[in-house]
Length: 392
Ligand SMILES: [Zn+2]
Image 1: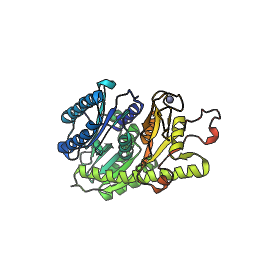
Image 2: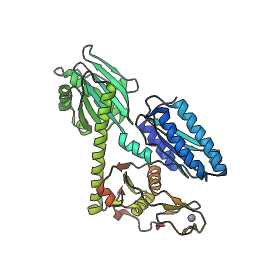
Image 3: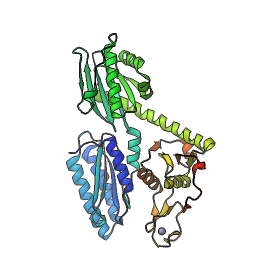
Image 4: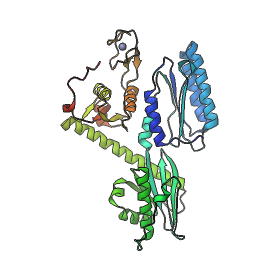
């Protein structure tokens, strides 16, 4: 059944797409914004298809028409009403048919490309910005716990004060839930926290936002145990009459702001790592090297990072950042060098290693270091002397 892609699925899909090998036939990566309905995505698709058709010939052109028909077919039949962004990766029959469509409650830009491998930047950015978190929405007489996963909210539990009744979503550890009877003084608050703690623990949740009646939310906040306080991102006021969708949107903006601040503090760690402990590298060449060595903890990339093209040998897989003057590979001597999108190459390596990628929105500090860098697993002292030489 069609559904909105979850964070867990997106992680798997990023690894899968990052590992997709090139076959000689291009992959169409189509990101579409769905906020303006069918007219919006059709216009974006038609406009881009018109340009791409002009550069394709023979089998590639026939393949492209087949791929385009598949994309349109999926969009007209499978889209959900609450989807705001779609990402579809397709390769036609001539290159070994392949299709991976996804839809999200979070918006995506209109961006369509043909490239030997899937272009995953916008997926990585979406995963980093929207991620997931839990909301405890608390009102004087009721409370609910929601999970927001890549922008899509699902109610996980509902607590009604007047009936002293608690309903827990069937997917979330019903059997583990027990009401704590001990706290008679503020039982309603403690009951909410006990449930929240169990649900967050069971789901491996790392971020929490409190929302609702300011007085109740403040009482809940004061009573939070340390482990939940560490996960608290913000307290967002909401009234009894606010629509749930509006409350979720308010928490989402707060979460995105938090994510931005977090990404800037990661840039600070990167700078620290470069300065004092050699626990980081920066700049395209060193980042590419570190990723190829698999010694990376996290890839950190500015949203404005647009490096010059590099090169890749399709015969021996050697790659580098300075495009050679002839198509002859400096490593194997085959005439098999093609131009390479360096940003995508870095994201592919991080995806294959299943390492997190932090996308930083416009950081002058990061741009002055070349726009990209890595936090490393070990300092350079741990590096082996007999590591093979890089082809850069
Ligand atoms: Zn080669």
